[in-house]
Image 1 (cartoon, rainbow, N blue to C red):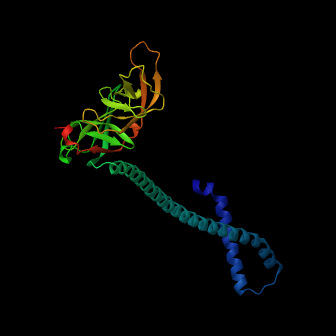
Image 2: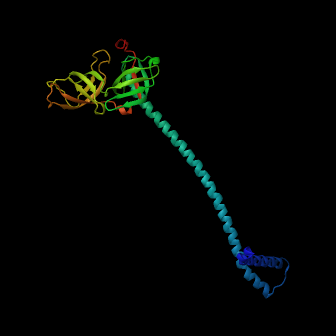
Image 3: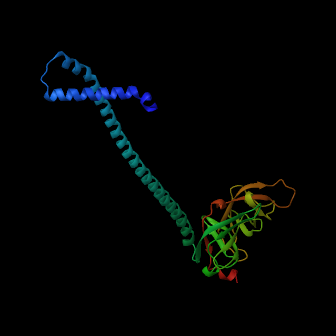
Length: 275
């Protein structure tokens, strides 16, 4: 009963429309009466036809738009997936290209020497206050030994200090425990390069009487037989002559960015220095 009371107007209108439509359909098909009543009915029901036709057309159009939008949405999903795959492929190609450039630079160094080199990849880092070491993915099974020099474009970066079967640790030049005999390329003044962590390196034990200037290139001296002579180490960025000591305070910036090390070369044929 509640349903009939609530929707009685809608039910009445629906029944009326259906009845009128049935009468009209019958008269149109079988009737021959040209009376005023028939004309009046046609005039009255005509707007109903228009409304019903418009509603049906609207529903049809809405349904077609829905089907179209669903198709567009599916197509967009496929295109987005394709774009993501292409972007991932592009990143992969870019990474391969950059790696090839780095390896080409390393190979250009090894081509300048007749020694044998072992290529390795950095797999870990240790960066304490003054300690600077990296782990590489090569070890004793690859012919590596403690003390072997390590290079990265464009020059020397350190030496091996811990060698296991498949992994080794490299002591970088900027580590406070690193000390290497070096020479100022311009005037052959000799000293010791020591690491000072994030501050880079310092060139020690050079008398204040020596002519060392900002911009001078520092290379390995070859003294001691550990490192070959003439490998690039760094460039002088500051010379302090005003300190009270006997020696100059010389700061040296390394040529290599140690924070970006990825591939390295280890000089493995310099056997006499490691036995």
